[in-house]
Amino acid sequence: MALVAEPPAFRASANPEAGVWVVQDRGLALDVQTSNRQPGFLVLGDFYHPGWTVTINGHPGRIFQTNYIQRGVLLPAGQNFVHFAFRPTSFYAGLGVSGAGVCRPRPRDALGDGRHQL
Image: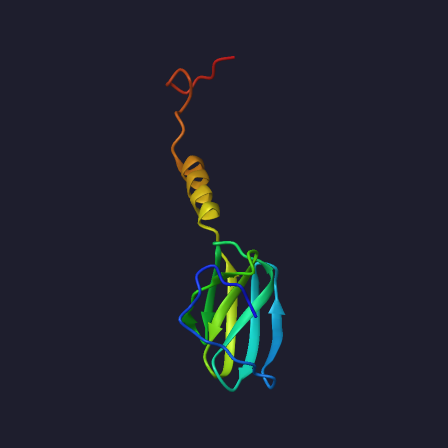
């Protein structure tokens, strides 16, 4: 059982034959393979943050805040490849602001004629 912040329109039942395998964990990205006979709900044991994105079988999915601090996703029945990636918008906004500061033209010098004031 999982407590979901915004419960999806989905009713899960026990699926003892279901399996989950971590394919690759790169810190800011996680690939998981699942196998389930009926639709299911995958809950990861790490922290929820709105910067996480998910694709399921190559299609964008929705991450639900689960058990207050974890993340969960709805899975269709069958074999699934789930890819999580951490892409916080605050990071990219800061990167854009920093990049704009680095790329802006600097005044030639204080005197404007190529000489440097000491």
